[in-house]
Length: 112
Length: 113
Image 1 (cartoon, each protein chain N blue to C red):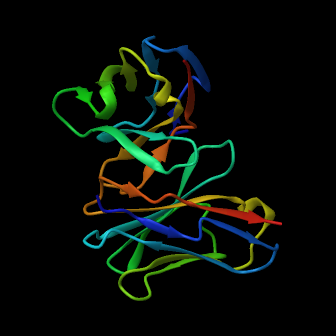
Image 2 (cartoon, each protein chain N blue to C red; image 1 turned 30 degrees about the horizontal axis):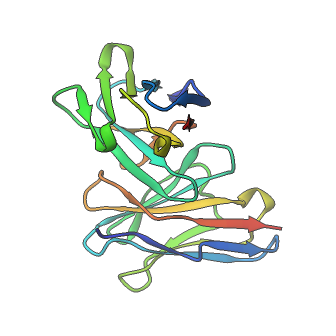
């Protein structure tokens, strides 16, 4: 069964540093998403991406966040200057249409 | 405020007990409804989804859910739980044509062997 692959599984970074979280969506999928889950809280939508541009973003997705699909296979989430409150599990998802998501196993980001 | 509510934070059951997890949403208009499961240390997996048609939806692993439009509810049920059902369960709603999912806070299910 096709999978969404996320790397790394766990990243520890110092406050103020830039991090890039990587995702390889399912190859024939057209819609890509990032969600996050702060420990003990609900899964929150960050951003959706379609046709090489952001189609929707939440209030959480401020100027320190950006997404890219640099090479047609990877889908990255960059956090420019990390804060302690960015510590969370970040999930990538992809879908063939605007539903039917497949989620990756997540990257646990710890900001110290 | 528009939201997805899961009223049970933690449910503890013995094996073979019946399960019902509540989910209510506050959006009007067309919605698509989902239940996801997250086993310890693993990613979110789709249990079942409702788009249209029969409001009683059957999913994987013996789970089902019923969409009651008048109650804005989409409760998850299983007649007889197993220890392997221990996980966190998330209800999610997709509003109309918008692509993103709005998740509830999740319900942790612990099944005692």
